[in-house]
Structure formats: structure tokens, C-alpha cells
Image (cartoon, rainbow, N blue to C red):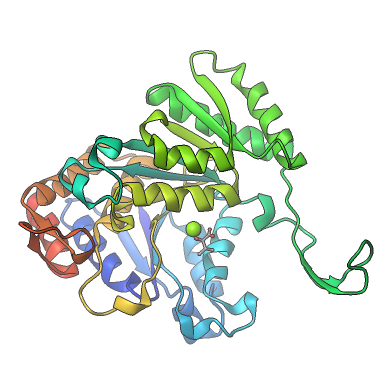
Length: 356
Ligand code: IPM
Ligand code: MG
């Protein structure tokens, strides 16, 4: 089994290094090949997603991705910016289903900014559609406004759109995920204002006929944002579009106290996937041995479960992470008084030790 390792920028290389260390002690024979992506791709060959990197990702059985982005690339033309690498990988690998769990480990209940009773035991799965919506809709750009009150002025514009088959396939992923959990699914839309999301709602409602054992409800995205902080435990599985999912998944991650703990999986129709921490490249702390590697290590666990058919190994890693938390080890982002502050490398090593 071949894993493409794409560390990227900022803290990407140091957190991915820890996840690779963990994969290496499982006693499996993975073939791992590393390639530059994001700003590192741009430095190496003038493009955030170099051809050889894309080829490796396409060939591999799974991709382990760190993070991309750095302020120093903010002035580049949009197609050359690091973020284009992840968007290009999602599009080229047809990774339409993004799974973002938000789980609060009991040991970290105090790390959340919400009251412990509101978040303790939180276990939500956000399923975000990842290759459609306003992210990829055409046309887009800046043009001279063709009509209306702003005619003749410059305007920026994007296109929000979803094809029926795109909604159906993500709805199936969501209903099937809900079947494996507590059989509750909330579809988040903005059907009161947007045609795209009235259509979304209608199609999700239609797909529901095939899953009578799942309780489906619909919620407007503004209300969902409110409920996520008011009573987040009312949710189990949430399914939504690319744009709303981007926003709500960041919000949900903070309920757990640290985005540094949250993995994610982006899957195609055959469960090939790209696995990355939910957080970004944090260039401000890069190379300082401060970053939390657990989200990346947990992403490697998701990779074993979803793409490599190694559920037992995934369990082993997740249990090892629980063990190091129970031992009181904390990186700076989840540190509280009375616990032991450790760096990126020490945290990775602690997980390795807990595995052996
Ligand atoms: C995410 C990120 C990306 C997104 C950016 C980096 C393009 O915010 O994965 O949530 O908007 O999808
Ligand atoms: Mg985001």
C-alpha cells in the first residue's frame, strides 16, 4: 500500500513527521513517498501543486497531507497561492466527501471556551460537500457590472451551484454515516433565500426515502451556527455544502477547545482519500516545536480506517492518543495548569511509546 506524504508549509512538516513516526511503528509495510505541496511546491517548481506531486497523489492509495499557506505568498496571483494546491487535489482526486469529526476528549473539557456541561461528551460528525458550490462554480471573477443599479462599476462575483447528482452522492454518504452512529442527520441549508439550497433540501429529502431508519431534520445555516454554541449536543451528523461546511466545521472544532485535536478525511467514491488535520499551517509557530501533532496523527488513524482497511490499527492509534492525554501530556494549545507541557516531537514520541 502506497501513501503519498505531502507535508506542505508552516507547521506541516513537523506534524507530518510525527504521524509518519507513528505509522512506522505499526508493523505494517507501507510504501511512503514524500512530495512538496503549497508554498513548498511553489518554491520547488513554481506551482503550488507540482505535476509530479499530483501524479504521486493520483497513484497512491491514500494521501497524508499536512497544511499549506504562508503570509509571504499572499501577494502571488491566485492560481499560484498555496491554497490552490488543496483545492486542486480535491478536484483532481474527486474528493467530494469531507468528514470532519468534532470530538471532545473528557480530559480536555476545560480547554473549551464553552461551559463544560454544554460540551462534555460532544461527538459530532460534520460532512461537508467538497468539490461543488460557490468554491468551484463558474463563472467567477471581477468584471464591469452589466446591469442594475451598479451598472458600469467593477464588481466581484462567484457562482453558487449544485448539480442533482452532487447532492445525491453526498446525501448517501451522510445517511450511511448516520446509520453507523445514532441515526440522526441534520441537513444544513439556506433554503429560505437561496435557490441552490432549496434544491439541496428537496434532493436530500428525496434521498431520505431510502433511509427510513434515519431521522432527518433541516436547519438554516444561521440557526445551525447558533445551535452549535447554544446546544451542540443536539447534533449527531450534519451534512452541508462546501461553503457552509467550511465555516461550521471551524466553529464546531472550537467547541472542543482545540482545532489542534481534529482530524479530517476527504473521500472519493471508492474511499480513496486525503487525510489532513482540520487546522492550518500556523506559520507563526512553525519550526518551534510548539504545534500539536495529534490532529495529524488522528488523521493517519482515519486513513487506516477509511482507505487502507486497517480498522484495528486505527483503533490502536486512537487509544494511544487517549493514553497520552490521560498521562497529562499537553502541547501548548491544550495546556492547563496541573498538566505537563510538551513539544511537538515529545508528543509524537509519547504516542509512539504508548503504541509499543
Ligand atoms: C479548509 C480550508 C480550505 C477551504 C482553504 C485553505 C482553501 O479553510 O480546508 O477548511 O476553504 O476549504
Ligand atoms: Mg476552512
